[in-house]
Length: 100
Image 1: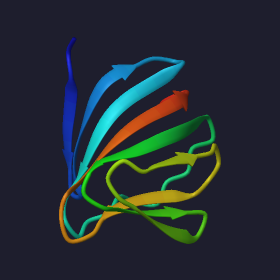
Image 2 (image 1 turned 60 degrees about the vertical axis):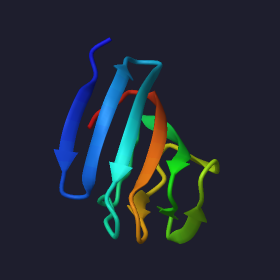
Image 3 (image 1 turned 90 degrees about the horizontal axis):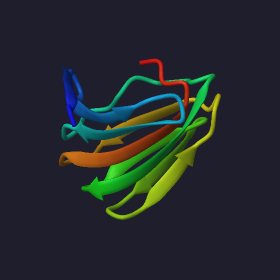
């Protein structure tokens, strides 16, 4: 299996599998960083915190998730992922068309 990796200003991600039914990624968010506000018309996402504490913004409300906790991001929801004072690692499973 070939793993695709990309570095971004907020950290990095590794994509393990991409196809129409689902895409599987590990997202590594650096301490005190966050991703841009996102909106996906053609896919929903499932996130599980693997390491650290995540700050999730979902349709204007803030949710704090710790290791082992999960959240579902429905299609068309505005959302953002961030890390607090240490790196957080998120397992992401996206369902539907994956368009980065």
